[in-house]
Figure (cartoon, each protein chain N blue to C red):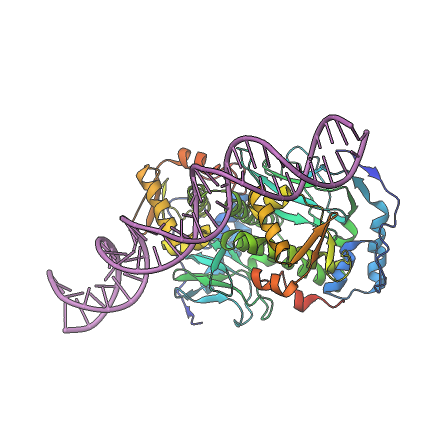
Amino acid sequence: MRATRVMASVSPISGRAPAFDLPVLRRLTALVPIDLTVAMPIDRAATQSKRYPARTTLSGERQPAQPARTIMSGWAAHCRLLSDGRRQIVRLLLPGDILPATAPDNVPSDETVMALTEMVIAPAAALLASVDPQVVRALRIDAAMQRGYLYTQVTRLGRQSAIERTAGLLLELYDRLALVGATEGPDRFVMPLTQETLSDVLGLTTVHTNRTVQQLRRERLIETGRGRTRIVDRAALAQIADYRRTGGREAYRPML
Amino acid sequence: MRATRVMASVSPISGRAPAFDLPVLRRLTALVPIDLTVAMPIDRAATQSKRYPARTTLSGERQPAQPARTIMSGWAAHCRLLSDGRRQIVRLLLPGDILPATAPDNVPSDETVMALTEMVIAPAAALLASVDPQVVRALRIDAAMQRGYLYTQVTRLGRQSAIERTAGLLLELYDRLALVGATEGPDRFVMPLTQETLSDVLGLTTVHTNRTVQQLRRERLIETGRGRTRIVDRAALAQIADYRRTGGREAYRPML
DNA sequence: CGCCGTTTTGATAGTTATCAAATATGGTGG
DNA sequence: CCACCATATTTGATAACTATCAAAACGGCG
């Protein structure tokens, strides 16, 4: 696993109030307002971020132990492998998400977290060690939301059709990115997943994923191209996917 | 939600070393040995257990806030509902499992935990408040295993066929029950799920679940009857389901 | 320009869902 | 002990959805 240091400041996000360098702070302050005096010291972790190329294994069987980290930029996938080669992406890890610390043998041999794109990752020790009540509360809410994403994933795979799954996932991705200010405008985001990777999230074959995405395009619900996805008709997508929660969008989103 | 007090001692389990009244202690000590002097005071929580009839909603939209509790006996289901009535059971809650505390509005409106059988539930405050390092460690491992069950559930639904899902779930259920000594002998356990409920776990229709179970019986891999399931050919089931982990059976199971 | 990974297409098989009804099963009251 | 009810399991026929296989178009890049 190769990693190179990277020079601090990564993404001076547009004109939103306190533009932290750490996406995780943008995410947490979106959940619970956090004092600047508390947040700024934590934000300095950004200066110690490292860069990893795409396809890097971030944690897995024979990886060294890792402290807790957070994603500055890039997407990763938490995968489970079946012994015949089938792969299921259990959850996607986006900017602002926390990669838990791993002990060397804590990780089942069939579980890996791999970088889907080039990534920049910062240590999360200062954040997780904070005893500030707002931070603690925000972390608790964040954990609850992450659990919610997982429950949603179970429900998607267990009870929804291909088009429902796809619509719902795209909405979730948009909303999760919006929480850290990593969208492009009110309805578009950088979507680095290949259809094959998308299939491993959705529990479908590549071919079927392709046809499903085409259907969504044909019905003018989304637009795709140049590595971007545009949510054209959010209402229709939300209806198709029976999309509401994602951990509590309505309740938790003070920005916008 | 009706609840009645119940007189202490619930299940003097067979002849295993420290036969705690709280299944959660049996589970935790199976993960990390815990001193009796530490465990016994916690075990007293068993005397404050309450009984709930089947179908009780244990937590959900308009339920009162609840402190953390653990299951003494009975099975519950954590469900997600789609607005058209489809239901997915995200995870099953078995004896020894912990029901997290809930704040009144912390629970999404489409999420409920409901008793599948009559249940006996004890408060978990003393357990969760413990600062004993062994207990803390055991709770951490337990949390990791529960996460593992959830990842397994995602993988089952996303990438496995009906027969694979069914085989894997039955093995998981056996192993989880074995951890708290709630099995009947080396290969049998009380299996209170109707095929309809089972379907909502497996993401299948009732009819298809029925045919799948029949196939497992026909091939002499399991036996069922009188609310029991018997794992007849564990090796074959494990092979079909690509079953290994479940959070680390091999690593964590000192009893037997 | 040509290579390689990704997306797209077509034809077909396989798995799972749907619908409707028959057959157990377990518990209850007479 | 038996008839009867409600619930659960089972069966059959058919439709719908998703997978599979193979190959053709794209698209970016050295």
